[in-house]
Image 1 (tube, helix red, strand yellow):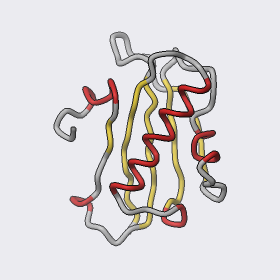
Image 2 (cartoon, one colour):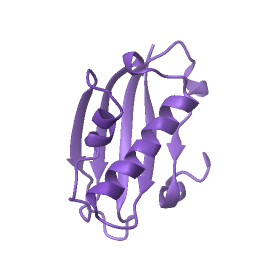
Image 3 (tube, one colour):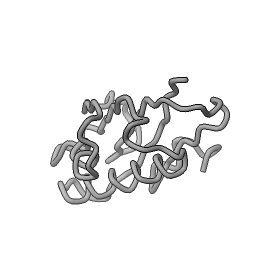
Image 4 (tube, one colour):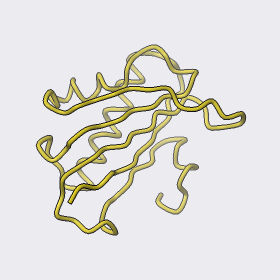
Length: 118
């Protein structure tokens, strides 16, 4: 089956180092919690809020050696009052797991987005 796994995190500063480091933490946890290897991952879509422009979060995946996975970065819709400095991920994967067994991951300030999962 193909499922989408959601994840999000926040950074405190708009720096390339922090964007890449926090995205890498998020991707590692998403992979670990769902028992994934790169070959299981079809593609990953990254979005960032308008206040993050120092780096593409996809660099984190490439730095992890995920060189054969399709990656795309986009801007999140700028909704007034929404969470700032947020990186969101949608990872499409091949897995034998049931949908109810998929583990979505929310870190740092992004935990407020899905308190039911954190």
